[in-house]
Length: 311
Ligand code: AMP
Picture 1 (tube, rainbow, N blue to C red):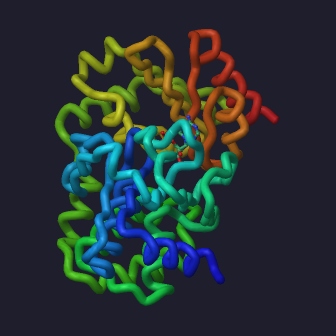
Picture 2: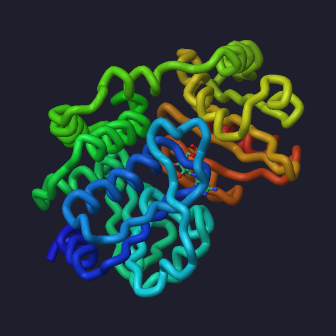
């Protein structure tokens, strides 16, 4: 039995299905979580399907999270999408269900769950969920197609990043057959508020770039207060340094309220997930995240990027 069939058999077996995704959600986390919820609700309307987690204010156009009671986990199937490692799962109750499934496209560094479907060749977890529904000929609603399409364009930067495959296009093409406001999704993903526009200008103006294409930007809490932006809103500028032709690998250090730094690492060529793993993080070869606990560690991370490009 393929893992897709195995996952479907488990969905058929349980009356309650709870779908988690990672903290600090992005469109792929929400698209895969809520897309899978919509698919299950369309094909098995009698089942109780819940999607818990933080209701990220900048992404409510995708959907809202469900309120959940710890009693809901009794005899429930729990599915976690788009989350490589357990500490990043939004909602610690995920382990209180009866059976746990992991569905993801990140490197499988933390193998958790009773059943694992990890496809690192997939552009996004939303692509995997759409593939699951299409392969098993499950009914897709217009809303599921909208969510999954948004997740795919989120994680591929609208088909720009190398993980975009011919299969990604085939699946996106299939989703485009459904009736959702395609232009509205595209606009949502391509527009930003005035305060983000100002942060974009700051990013371009203050990015430090060395002669080999290493670059860094530091966003302190004071600066974020000045621009009135929250940590999740920094995602709007993560791709910006890559638009500069001489930038090859870059790090954005985002200071957190407790003083430590979330480090968002991106690369056009060299693999940077080993650097992330050395600093309490992980991720894809060209898009990773880490944590730094001092200004010295910030310097060490930037030095590792510079060394990577020097060699
Ligand atoms: P971000 O910069 O947060 O968008 O993260 C980029 C990629 O790195 C995402 O695919 C995340 O799954 C991964 N990532 C970010 N932070 C961590 C972390 N602390 N541990 C493992 N993977 C991470």
